[in-house]
Image (cartoon, rainbow over all chains, first blue to last red; front, top):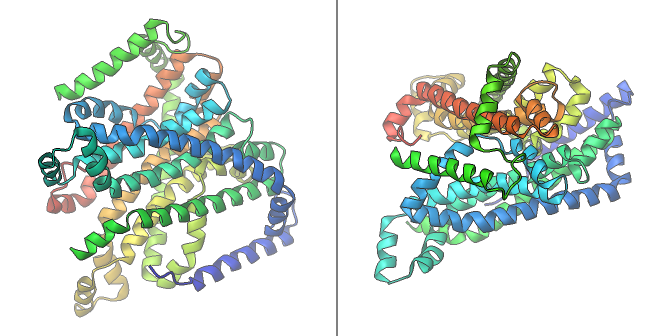
Length: 251
Length: 253
């Protein structure tokens, strides 16, 4: 759990940054901005960028939250009730190979180009990792657990909430992590295609008006935010699953 | 098998029922038979099969490039620990970028042409392939290393003859994840920058409100995804069949 400072890695990152800047200074072309120009664009446009980032994150977060709220209980239900799961699973398998990006046009036709259309795309894409992982996780639980719940005379609902959910949590969490990354991706793509606002739309506008430094600034911002989200989910995951790992260690 | 069919038939009936019920405007949400007819008309048209081929070629070429590069870099980082550490932060930053977001900057770099698509698709599928391979090569069994050393293997021999085969199952997993992302990236790039390919046709159909065509193209993309999955799975069976047989995971993989 100790985090070593990765000195060679940091040095290489700095070296790349310097090399980039030097190359850009030598070429001195408007189509090849250096790191300083990108950081400059990041700071002059920070108002707009932060506003657009807010739009993007809000869409990604609300889509993800809706997907989680629907798919987690549904996944436990489908994992627990065999007959239902067997009926629905082939349909999921049939729809899943379609990349969620391909749903953007459908969303546009039904919902226009507003928030609803973009959030719907996020919900659709973010649903699959959660649903599939939850079904699998609940199905592969130790059968002993279900004997225990029966001897404790738990109702079906209690059993799903008190036993199935926590026991399946580690696998569910890996689905959630996938789904968070996908939410950000889909929010950006939906904004790029149905451009009104958000970082995706900012990227497209900057590209259409040949402001390359701004394109790179937006990319840098997206990468930083995605890294931050990664760090947060890891921290939450470690906290939420601390009991689980300790149990495994004792065994 | 009957249960599987039952689910699919029920879903199709629900689709047909919803489309005919009038709850959703029929021109937005055509029933399955209309979509099937539109799909058939597309498939026998002169241009459409060529567009399918374009998309497939882009996707497969991009995935092959990503696999070659990803494995080559992973083998180098497996051999030289310092390189692995050096690349770690850069990799960490680049792999979190949503691949479609690099479309605008790639248009500056490559223009709208074959290079653009190859770059975006290879960029998207490179990360899972490299990450899985590099991490699997980092973790190796001490016993294997000691065995190799006592057999007089050089460091390269240990890497290529012991650690690489041991890492193959995870490498294959990475390639399978990469293949899924390759399809997503292909469709996204074609929608954003395309003048050809299924992604472009899909977007075009939606904008011109040819909804039956739109759903038919979605079905075609989905079927491509299924076929592509099956292809990669068969290929991985060939490579790691021995592993699947040993761990008895063959059925579920």
